[in-house]
Image 1 (cartoon, rainbow, N blue to C red):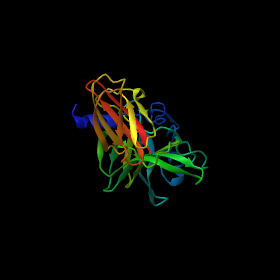
Image 2: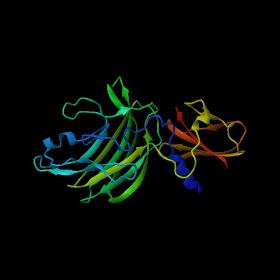
Image 3: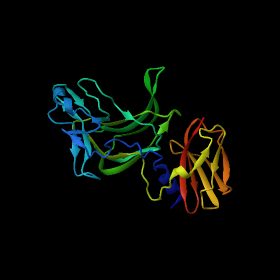
Image 4: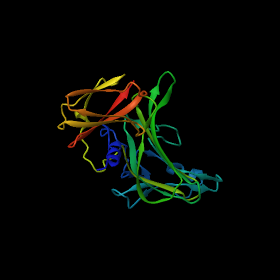
Length: 288
């Protein structure tokens, strides 16, 4: 595998988020015309002057039985275009009871899935976004920790993969994940989505990052890495920030424990990748 392909493969791997995935992110579970764990306009579509549901169960799907399709529709009674949308959560739009978002406490690298975008007029827009946030008691508000957002106005007629890097603006651990899917623009513009998750492997075997020991973590100036579990003598070391940019690299001999100076890096989340001829490992750490 070429080095560029190797780096891209690493960047879209999961990083200890297997225990907390996107609820019903494959859109296989529906009840009364609504995707379970998602909030849509379907329940109030008649009140908004729509004669058909803006969000429907789509079949065939690229995986499993169903995907989700959100269509922007014109309402004559409202004299306006009503966007097709789905929010992760359980809020009742009539009463305002419930929540947008679900509990979540991981720090993923990328937000992945597949999508189609049908354009009616130039400028019709689809938005696919995931926001990680944390409650700030002093402000009585959710404060954004990280986000991964894709906005497109391009026609995408075939199911197409997407992998959006998370951009972290805080070293806080999130407590909530919110997912937003939008289609807005002309009457009939639509966004279809399936297989929402946090990363996937594309061509190399992912090794368990539990074997990688970094200390301290969080770190101030130097991060120390225990290399005793690696089989190779020569080790390529790369460090990436949360936007996928390489910010540091080194080549080490396997001397059991080695240190890496990261004094000049900004505060935030980073991922270190260790590669020998036989193995690839990765692990995230926090720079204070």
